[in-house]
Image 1 (cartoon, helix red, strand yellow):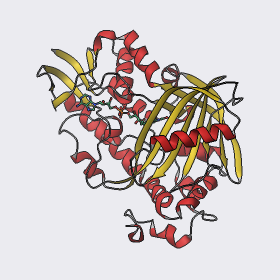
Image 2 (spheres, protein in one colour):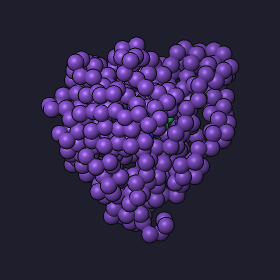
Image 3 (cartoon, rainbow, N blue to C red):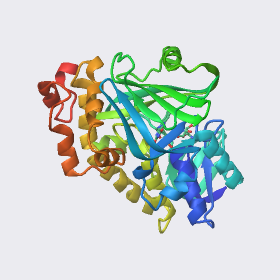
Image 4 (spheres, helix red, strand yellow):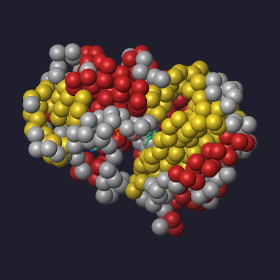
Length: 386
Ligand SMILES: Cc1cc2nc3c(=O)[nH]c(=O)nc-3n(C[C@H](O)[C@H](O)[C@H](O)COP(=O)(O)OP(=O)(O)OC[C@H]3O[C@@H](n4cnc5c(N)ncnc54)[C@H](O)[C@@H]3O)c2cc1C
């Protein structure tokens, strides 16, 4: 088989590239090769409207399962409603939109065993030639990059009665703080339908599904929400980089193959969210001229380098979040953050902090003990934490 573009991995990054190629280059032939049985996995991908370039927002927002005006956060001494649109894309809905639009360009149960800039080999031995091969196979921890994790378990639940939430509660940190920063995330998907996620910043990637399930049930009961059905469960452990040089990441790539998504380090280092960067990459791919591996690989590598360098500051915040305070006090870092101006909060999520914002984030009354905070400044794990 020969195609113009072969997309390896049918996750968020490559599905958005495919969607944008279909928008802007209808004559370009492309094909997605996904190892698993479904496209997109099992996720809810949320983002703030202000995370995206205004030119990209309309087509991405059109893929959303739901959109809200504003969102809320809660901490022991702070409750706040913030303005701005918040959107969620469901992986099942995105996969079905792709199936409806380009059904003959999607292959599931198609594991790629070898890839080069000009082609790939599938597990059944068949070969595909392509002018451009794009690697979007998801995160693989490269040596030399130290990470913590944001792990979460989400239950999409149906309640006996309407929950009364009119907008997402993206952090409710009034829950017990066990072993690190922990919060509940509640997204109203319908009058009686809620996505409830138990989220924790932890050292280990293991996901205690049953513990989280019980924590979610306790939380729902405390809020007066009677769960009658669990419609869907999603879980994951997102890498939260603490230290690391960009070369370590790039050495893990296949030479000459354009790399996208979390595998390319294209995610927000503190929240672990990758959608805004995936949209940026999709725009670069769909407008590349010429569209071939040799031309595209350096363009995407430059995007990774820019994002990784800019996020040095987020890695510092991560070290503070993980090491500068006792585990049950770490929520204070975020509680203080959410007292700041809305513009700064918006720029933080959009990965567009100004030098003044950075200064504002680390000055003032520190939310963590000063000496432990200072120990986090160099890009290495503080020795007292090893
Ligand atoms: C449960 C969960 C919720 C999340 N929520 C958000 C959110 O709200 N907002 C946000 O921005 N981010 C969110 N993230 C983070 C991030 O956006 C996701 O991890 C996102 O799916 C990453 O996209 P990706 O395309 O880089 O990788 P993935 O979506 O992981 O896709 C990689 C794909 O490659 C396939 N693959 C791997 N190896 C092969 C191979 N050899 N051959 C063929 N295919 C292969 C895998 O099966 C997988 O489908 C969430 C993550 C998780 C786990």
